[in-house]
Image (tube, rainbow, N blue to C red; front, side):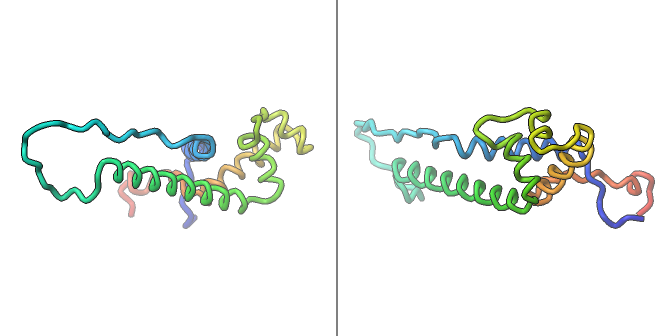
Length: 151
């Protein structure tokens, strides 16, 4: 009996690929332009005071800074996760997904000097497995014991 949870490899691979895409997007994206409402409203109504502490301009500036901080934090988190891989695993990941030009799998395993079967059956799944745990995106299979009424 194993105490380690079983990982759903297909869903975990999808989660890791989504994390990679998020990382690439954060590196390449510019914060969305949110223009403040600067057109004054000319009315004779009395102003309504609420619990709003910031003007719309200040609120947009705060949101932009928060979003940029979130992006920088994720990029750093992802970088640290990738650096936990072995040098050869890092090289394969960067060649395949993170380089300026993404290579195909056959180009990666040829550059690394390994067989196609080893790359697809052992090497690449191990990279996804390790990266999933480092990024905390692994998908655990539900326990079969619970379905059978065994706790």
